[in-house]
Length: 555
Image 1 (tube, helix red, strand yellow):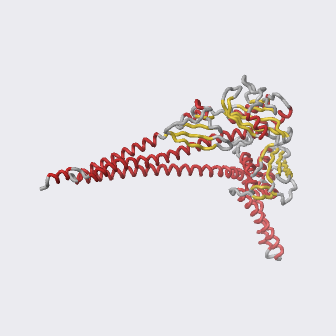
Image 2 (cartoon, one colour; image 1 turned 120 degrees about the vertical axis):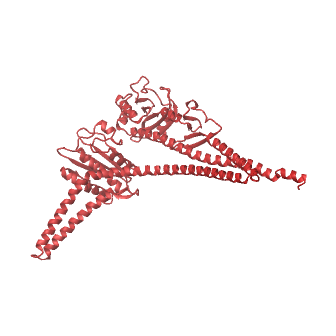
């Protein structure tokens, strides 16, 4: 029989088991807390970064569009003429600015002379018109006059509303004669941000809030809040930063839940271990239940991890699809143009094919009666016709091929001749005259042959279509160059473009052709700018057709 001392020792759990239980009850929940919170915070950081990048792209898009408006107006001949003539008020230019403001969704656009006085404004017909006001004291005006561009976020002196002022100088013969200003107000963007649980701010160079989902914090330092994750992203072409503050309450709650679950698991394990000696079968059932529970928990974690991985892959795939769609858009325009000239190419191929057939028949008839001379002549002409077919089909395949993106020295004469071949049948069908410049073969530009050919085919096709039913259709090409640049003009004898059509000429999907896509000129100008040049429309001349000016860099 056991002694009383022995019975006392067996009724009391060993100290090692108590210490192990304490260690497990403290260390396991604590480790679970840190691991779960770390994983949740990593996912939260990824989501916050994606949100910040999305909002940054939206803000960049707004600013780029308005900067483009200011840049385009800075070279507008009507705007330059107003400043050159020294007019203190120009209602026609003001109406033009008002139309452009409505199309671009800016707040107000106004024109200032070299002294800083507004001579035209999109709000010229409103009580709070800017026309006549002196803005020479503004930083954006001084920056634009000195550096070419200016930017300032400030409170409007007339409107009393906050906004970003984007300024661009206007030059005449190399000297600044005024400034065009586009004001942007971000009320709609702030309201969209305010609907989200994440707080979004745009910080200026002095670390003060300029744009915010909480307008009451404007012009104040960034609020310091506990329990938030702060994500920053710099804004292009500016010293601003976009800041997104995301609450970390979710990861903390998840970590607490996981730690509590871990503590519960440890406690249940201890209870199970304590009951093993008395009830082996019940302990085994509980062990299997716990194993199943852990398997379900691991499966849930794996499923969630897999879902997050799939979401990241889908987002990356979406970005790649966007890049492919942009490339396919350019290719679609080329194929649309290719579709317009397919009928002419078929005519071009049918003529030499008919000649080949006739000459082959003649060769068969002549072979028994004549020497090899006549047969050889016919075969030589057959070879010439097949070579012609090969040239036509090669040019057609080359035009339909996607651009590689590699730019090099391209002969302008070769590009013009290739474009004329692709549009030859349409000219012959309308008896159109063509006036070409005398270009040296070694005159080269910095471009890519396929994309330069696309610009020329678009311009020649538009010039041809503009002269439909004209009594004396003709197209004239003229070229001038210096050591750095080359300018090619394409002029037609059509009715020209009206003021309304000219203002929206380079707007996507704006077209007056029944089968047109409205993308040819937009894509052509983008390609020219990618080459380091530009594509513009010359001011209309009464009684003359349209003249497009293609500027390229010399190779």
